[in-house]
Length: 151
Image: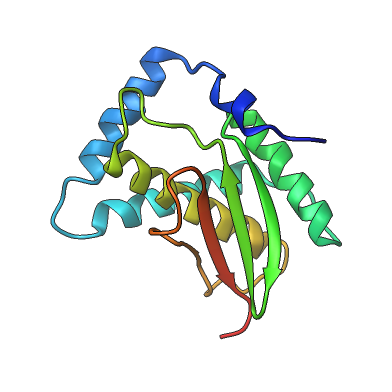
């Protein structure tokens, strides 16, 4: 399947639900510590447990299975690429904040996705103690996550 970031970004979200998530993200990201973000990662892992992906024998199949699951949420799509001793997950067309550019929304969204991808990769035989981490300073347009295969 061919994915187009622009067509995903033009999809509409239910206003009430989008606003609710916006307020929750704001509350979780307002503390002085990372506790709220850790909670969002945990929520992401729980989503990954609830919405399991099929077993994958190749990287291409894993990418396809993750994209099928993301489609349920209308959360964009990913591209995966091995790089040295890590796996890069490039998440395109992630759900943007309802109003304007919002750094807290961005970090909160990335935290949920970190947990989600960590759970999905663990379910495929990945190391459960190795988290998927967001590369915060990479780019504004997409999220880039790293999963270190060898620690």
